[in-house]
Length: 512
Ligand code: HEM
Ligand SMILES: *[C@@H]1O[C@H](CO)[C@@H](O)[C@H](O)[C@H]1NC(C)=O
Figure 1: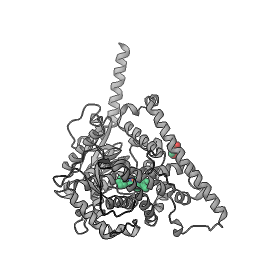
Figure 2: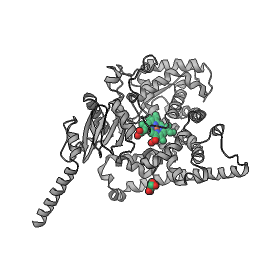
Figure 3: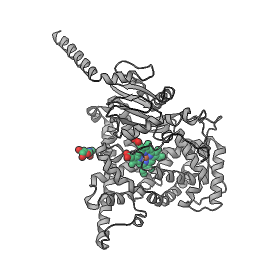
């Protein structure tokens, strides 16, 4: 009994002291409007415990709530305070000021280590400096050849899987995306599209899937428990495969560079022209300082980061665009007319000069990334209290959920037809955003996506090769608002998968 009393006392004292230390946080939180279904202690954690579709439903709900209440709402996830924000003026400041990523990313960090995307700011700065020149427009343009060649394989793959029935677009677009990423990143062809079972693709997908399970399952987050499960053995196997795979590529490249150096007289520094069709790996070795630059571990982290950050995001972008075209045949017809104008009856491969001519397709992709942004939220840590332009004060120690999904659908900035699928809203004469952060599928500020130009070339190139040859037929939509149930699976994805019918077009514009 005595022991019990002591225990209770200690708990009470600890709690009072804990709450006292955090009184500023509670006070500031109480000023912000919020949804009324909070529970004691766990806050709204129960709203994120269902399946990944429920999680996305909750994220949507909080985003719409924020739209109605001056762009911000807040929630407690257990003991952590999060602000969900959609106001573009506030978001610009947040994305400029809060560069540190939230701790929910620690499970990704287990795999990617200090790789740019989730690295702590102290490490991120140098890595970002080295990445930027590797993603210069000239270099990215040189990759269009890779995109174009790799997208030829899509039609072969489609021919194999389509038949007459419904197909799942996901394995098609993700295999393309991975093939393109591996070739541009590491200079290797892995033939994920030709093999029925690409081991690298499977290891990557299954590994990421286990990580996403951990992010949402409190039990799996416990390290000791996780390590007891068969899931852990699987996880380790996948991670090892992915590491071994990248390490081998890195070693080979190092050896090759060494041999080249010995055979060539050392020219000192390199010119931009030298950059033609070099892989990111080669560029990162050079840009970081050659043999004195990145270590093998650092290279592995960066290479995997680029592959992981670039593969599923682009694949999701492609898949949603195709789903939308299946729902809106008129819009697809306009895309097809444009393709006929650019390619005529020729079955030639796409070249980089074609892309700027595909203006309508570009608008379609942009509008698809608006309504279905592959990265629907970004979470940043608040390290110092700050006052935002709207007057909201955010306490240190909280987290900010930047709702890209919400900002993209806010009628305050997009008008009453914000939810409509209308590619022509991106026509230069109609597109007059008051604020850059109202449209940011690739985020904004110093930590935004370095791969956005890459994605905006890779996606249309691949779509072109499908749309020249096939008509996408989906469930027709009755109105201008596309209804696609979505889930939050690290990325935004269609809850029921990306299923459409692909009907072969006649005449065929591209040789098989
Ligand atoms: C449609 C496709 C893509 C989307 C929607 C997308 C989205 C994003 C977003 C939202 C972020 C920033 C997260 C934040 O602000 O905290 C990001 C970061 C990043 N992305 Fe992308 N991305 C795409 C394609 C790519 C591609 C193709 C690559 C590389 C080939 C890439 C490489 C990166 C890297 C390295 C970062 C980390 C930047 C940093 O932390 O400094 N992304 N991406
Ligand atoms: C990241 O970098 C820090 C500082 O250099 C280091 O202590 C840490 O071990 C690194 N983490 C990984 C996973 O490599």
